[in-house]
Amino acid sequence: MHDIPEVPEVSLGSLIHAAIPTPPASVFDSICKTLIANGSIQASDENPEWKCLPPDTSAAKYETGSLAFFERILLAVIHSHNAFESDVTFQIAQTSLPLDCPEFALDLDDPDEFSYLQRPRSGSGKASWTDIVMAMECDSADDACNKFNAHARVVWAMYHAMRNDPRRQFVLGLTCQDTKARLWYHDRCAVFGSEEFDINKDWTHLVRILISVLLAPPDRLGVDPDMELVLSRNPGAASSYSITIRNSGTGEPTTYRTLEMISSTGAGSMVGPGTRLWLVRKFVANELNGPCY
Image 1 (spheres, rainbow, N blue to C red):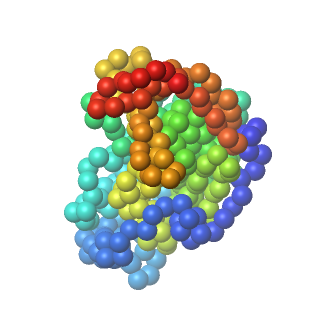
Image 2 (image 1 turned 135 degrees about the vertical axis):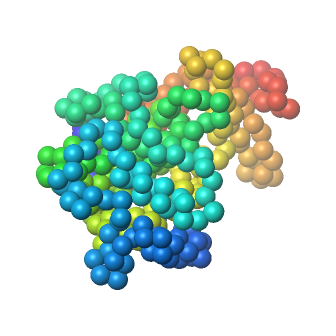
Image 3 (image 1 turned 30 degrees about the vertical axis):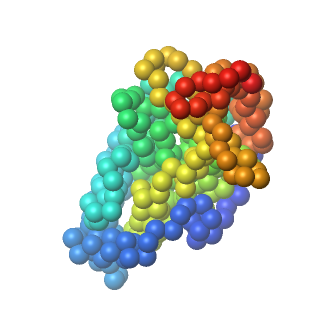
């Protein structure tokens, strides 16, 4: 990875505290109790484990894109409480996404495939970088080669999510080899990976991460609340955005609609300022107004 020769490892607790919102304690406690009560978590007092995991995950054969075991964990969490909305789904992205692979992705197996948590846009049936909530990589084998490959793939996916969606302030990732998982974080300053944790022994950490991601609104997961993607009926059209600027003195908002990107200096770099410059017009009462800026 040419921009990131190494990724700092931080404690899981510190990354969870800094990167993802805290869910209501009552919801977290209720979900954990329900998962134990309905048998999703077995032997919770001694050697806890997810019921949906095979007895020996390292011996199981998971084909690329076949992450049914992790999907079952996600569904078990969702079905354990009525607080969840159904707009976050777990999917495998195929080659339907426009790709421009960086150098470090060229040695990866199928760099155009990765898994992710998605919040799909209304009216859109295709996968999009703008829909990604969390990039994910799972593998049954916990060896050095697979671990490096999974780490590189999730960093690559986070990088592309940041690169292709100018609303992104940061993006999250999750890797899991056998039962060893890591939480990942990427913004314009750096990339961090948490220390490993066991999804059986430390199952409450995984539940905490999933609950936070499932319940959090987009602006708590790195999407700029003052920048709205404008949906288009033309799938080939360039993305357009409504950008709200607030007067520093009065707080009065002014909304601009992007017409054309003039420059995207640095946006393709993994770290550093990703400056984008658009031709815009004011957007008032659902109509373009005034001259171009």
